[in-house]
Image (cartoon, rainbow, N blue to C red; front, side, top):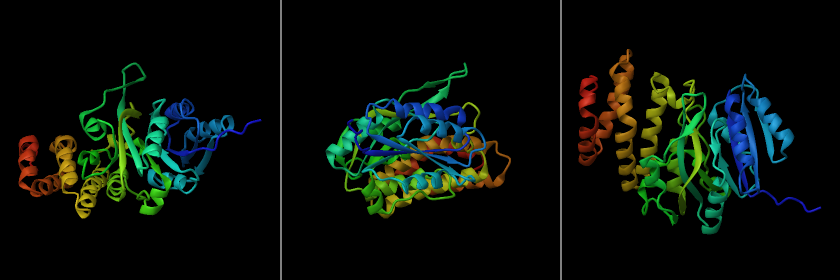
Length: 323
């Protein structure tokens, strides 16, 4: 009997209390056109049936390995647990409430294996509730397309500064030796843990590839339990603003002026306006103060950024008493 080929990529799949969605994530791995994968399913202290879904998957499919955290440690810690178990040349990530498109691993692994780059990133779309109890995939948003379209191989931030707008771990496949060489780990105890890490990847890589293919469908949960749906809470806001500022600081420290400017423009146009709207009606003065201080820091970076901020959100800042 011929032995199955050795896996070339490990996919780390963390999940906490996502039993309603975890089966779709598992099934999307099984449906991959690239068969030479293995996956580490990390149940991060779930109190629902997430762990049972993972265990059932591993019982049916030897390419799955399950790790159970006794108590919740957070998304970063769960991903780091998976990283410690990787023995393949490449590594990728998939959150257990999201799903891969069928050719995701084929395209990402194939691209970076052929080019020799340190990692590859692809496009993604949101899965939004459809009103009938299901989810519908949306279109590729402009900032995602700016980072991933057209395809590029062996590029850098100097050549492609807009790549800095792709800050999510699960849209990428990397060489594992790149993680070791660059000393990359997810920061434990923080929300929005992808932001700073992504900029460290861009600034540490010898080269990276981008592809316009949609590789992940990212779920916006109908019950509002996703961390991205809790930005109205002050502790979440503080982590969010710290991550945004930290990512810019990594680019600044690396001398990536164009990439930092691109990132600031994207934050001004995409991240800041909804925060200003939340702050306008927020009962906590500390929340409004944090948003206002962050907006002023962006304003102060340079005249160009200041003009764009003025055009986009200065009236709203004034109306919300943040300016």
